[in-house]
Image 1: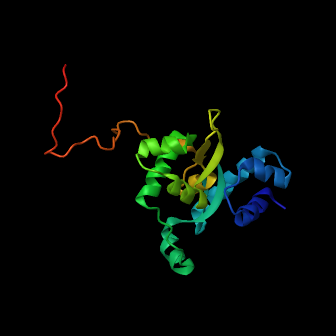
Image 2: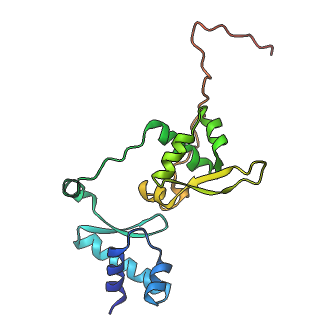
Length: 185
């Protein structure tokens, strides 16, 4: 039984991205053999298969190539799982500032975010990651492996940079007819 063929079978049955270390433990072979086999398997899939081997969420997974997306979607008829603007906003705050408390999320957004956080936890995009060592010991939230998987990220370092993006302050602009106070300089 070859390492490459066994690895292909394990990738086929894996329901989430799997690390080379996990494959090595399951197969009883050194990690370097798994990494070599993954490289060969990825090359083989690249040239003559409708599948591809991708590195995502810290592990490897098989998926169909993009050119087959329309046919696969017609066949599987997936449910659209769209996130509302408020859920995306809350998720962005958590992703970029994690670990973060609900009060900190509320402070950034300027509104109560408890419903959004509950929805994100239910969708397995956010998880409780601990407690802040402060009075009341508030829950800390962070993104999950499912978040990485859903957004096709290998790690949090792959998030787009916020450099050059101006911070948005809620209520920073006043209507044109609103009187303002002159500040002494």
